[in-house]
Length: 307
Image 1 (cartoon, rainbow, N blue to C red):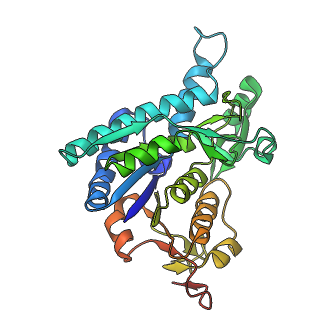
Image 2 (image 1 turned 90 degrees about the vertical axis):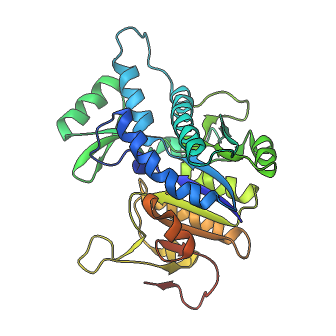
C-alpha cells in the first residue's frame, strides 16, 4: 500500500510547548514509532507542517538588528524543510536500520492571483495577548487574528498548483526509498520559480502529492483524535466515518481543521477506493487499522457520517 502521511506543525510543536529543539525532537521520536510501523511493508511518503516553526524564525528575523530587512517567507520555509526534514530522516534511520530515507527540498508552484493573498488565514508562530498583537501589527505590518483566547500572526496560504520535484520524488518512491517531501506545503514559488511571500497550504499540498503519486491512503495527522460532531459543545463526539459531501457541510475553522477537511475531501473524491484519515499523530497504527480517527471516503453515500 502507498501512504502519504502529513504531520501537522502543531503536532510537532504543540500549543503551549516551549520552542526548544529538544521538545520538537521528542515529539518527532514519538511520531516516528508510528511512522516506522506504517512504513513496514508499505511505501511511505511523509510531509509535515511548519506553522509554529516558520513563525518562530520570522520573529527572530524581524527582530534581528543585524538585518536590514527580514528574511522572506519562502526562505524561512526552506529553512524549516531542512530542519524538520533532518530530524525526521535521522530518527527514521535509527528506527529502521537499512531503510533508505531521504528528505527532498521541495518547491510548490502557486498562482500569483490566488485569493488567499487578500485574505491571510494561516496561523504562524507564537501566541500573543491582544495588546502585543496590535503592537506587532503596527511595528512589522503583520496581519493578526484571534486564535482561541490568544492572538497570532496570519499569512497568505495559497493553494498548490504543481510540485516541482514530483518526478524525482516518484522515482525515489518507486526505488523503495522512504521519502520526506513538500514540508510546510513546499517552498512557495510563482510559475517563473521566483519565491513568494506566503506559506502554502500544507494539507492541500499533501493531497495533491498523494493524488499525483497514486497513493491509496492519505493520513492527515494532527493534535486532535478525530473530526468532532458538534465540536465545542457538551455533545461533542468523534466522527468515525464520513463522506466528502457531509464533511464539506460542516462549519470547520479555516485556520486549523478546515484545510485538513478540504484536503481529505479532494483526495477521497479523486478516484474510487482512495481513503483519507484525520487523527492524532500518536495513533498512527490505530488510524490505519480503522480503530481511531475519522475516515473519509466516497462509499456509503446513503450514510453521510457515522460516530
